[in-house]
Image (cartoon, rainbow, N blue to C red):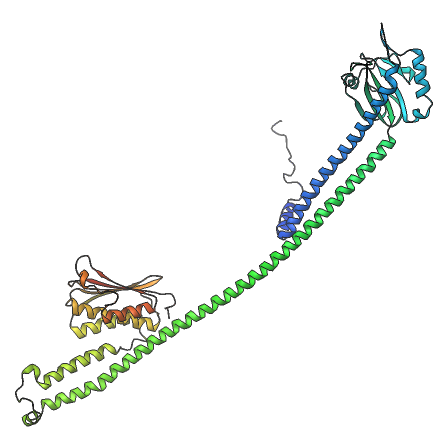
Amino acid sequence: MGPNQNVTYGPKNEGNPSKPNNLFRYWHGLGLTAQFLIVATLIICGSMAILGEWLSSQIAANQLRSRAEAGALYVEGFLARHVEEGSSGLYVSAERQQELDDLLIGTELAERVEGFRIWRQDGSVIYSTDKSLMGKRLPSADIDKAFAGTVVSQLEVGHNDEGGVTHGDNHPMIEIYAPIYRPGSRDVIAVGELYEEAEGFIAERNRVQRRTWAIVGATTLAIMGLLFLIVRRASNIIESQRVKLKSQLTNAQALAEQNKKLRKAADHARMDATKSNETLLNRIGSDLHDGPVQLLSLLILRLGGGSPGAAKQSGLSENPPEELHPSRLASQVLTELRELSTGLVLPEIENMQLEAALRVAVERHEYATGSVVSASYDDLPENVAHALKICLYRVVQEGLNNTFRHASALDQQVIASADEKSITVVVSDAGPGLVRAERPSEGTRPLGLQGIRNRVEAFGGSVQIKQRRAKGTQLIVSVPLENNSA
């Protein structure tokens, strides 16, 4: 090819490439039942077609074999006795030829049998109803098979001899080669050939094949009908099961939705109960502050300003010890009542963010105790449920009270942090810590810690009290954010 020659190539993609895609989409668009029926129909029809073809071929072969065996018996019964052996080999005498001609030419038998031949092993014809073939050598593989003792039969049109020579008119005939045995032995000395009219044979064969195909077709239709009924029945069962499962799924979803609503209602009830509890505590604190505290204040004023005669009339010593002086006792009671009421009454934290509320708890502790608290706040959410805010406020309050009482306020720390799932508050100190024997058991927890645990577990959280590695104690509280957000 020269450098200036142009080469034109045809299109690479011939036809319509979208057809396979359309068939693929159509196939996947069918239901499972339709796909199964189509595949089953193709398999059954293909299998029955192969079976029918095999049966037809077997029937035709068996019919032809039966005709060949009948022809072999005819040859053995009528032709074998006419063959004679001489010094020059096999031959059929003139008298025998005349007998055969009288039997096979121009008779009723000749209407069915088109012709006869007798062959030597070298392929030469020693007798034939067609006299033009006598003495000729027409070797054939079929003759060799017959000399080996095999009956050979075939269906053909006309007298088709070896070498392409055709005799007679063109209508179907059965050609049969049968061995002729030496009398009294199984030695094959010659081969007899006969051509038998095959129109009746073909008609009978076609009739049997049609019946065979009719039976195969009826069987196929019966199988397909039975398969269709089975598939339809199975489809109805599957559909009913699907409807039942769908109904059960709908009921399960409804129950799940109902449980979800009940859980939310329970959460709201829990938060409302916590809020009501805090409201009650606030009222108790206010009542203590406005009632007994005020009365004790008035009592202190009166006792402090009373006359000695009043003490004498009451039976008390005019000069009691300092620690038993009524004004001293009343002052102690007043102090304790003020501390109690201060602990019960919460500041206004409802509108505060969580971090601000925890700061208030730390600042109130520092103001009340005169101690110092190291506090840090990390990624606390801005909006949480008010009841949870109160709970965490009480956790910090109770934890710091314990550090002040039991650890002498040494290294008080509050660490509050949050992630996507939970809020964690850690209150720790550097006190003597808890020895194993002093750690609270399940049934003997201090009242304050038991209250904290009850509060936290109401929100699905957990409480842990651990010994610090160096020195001191840690109160670790973790509360999940799920269902506890504002």
